[in-house]
Image (cartoon, rainbow, N blue to C red; front, side, top):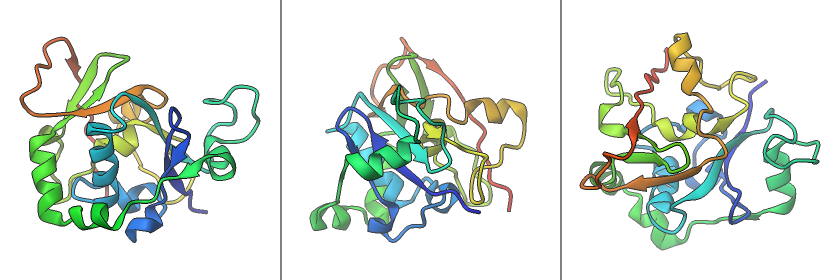
Length: 192
C-alpha cells in the first residue's frame, strides 16, 4: 500500500495537507524542486517558520520517535491533535511557477541549524529536467515502508533520507554567509 505524508511543524503544532495544493499525498508525488506544495513549505521556512522543528511525517512512521510516551506515529498525532495550516488564497496565488523559480533562485540554501549543515538546491542532480527537492526527503520519517516512497540508489544516498528529521530547519538567501556550516550533497534521483 502507499504511504501518505504530511509536513508537521512540531514547534507550532501545525501540519499541512498536500491536497490543499492539488498534490498527491505520497512522498514522491510532490517532492520536486518546482512543486507548489514544497515551495510553500520552503517559503514558510524562510520566514515565519525559520528555525522550527519540521518532520515530513509518514503514516507508517516510527511510533513515539518524536513525541515520547505516545505509541502512535507523528502523522496520526498531527491528524488528531494539531491544527491544519491552510494556505490563504493570496498565498496560493503567489505559488505561480515563475514565483517558485524566483524563490528557489533567491533562497537556495536549506539549513539545519542544529547540525550546522546546509544543502545548496542549485547543486541538486538534474535528471532530464526533473529535480528532487531535498527538503521532504531530508526531514522524512517512515520512508521505505510504502508505495510512493523514495527509493535510494545507493548507501550514500540512503544515509541522507531522514537525516534532518526533528531538527531546527530553515531556508536562507543566496547571499547568506554559510562559512560556519558544512555543505552536504545528497544525490536524490528518482528512477522512472
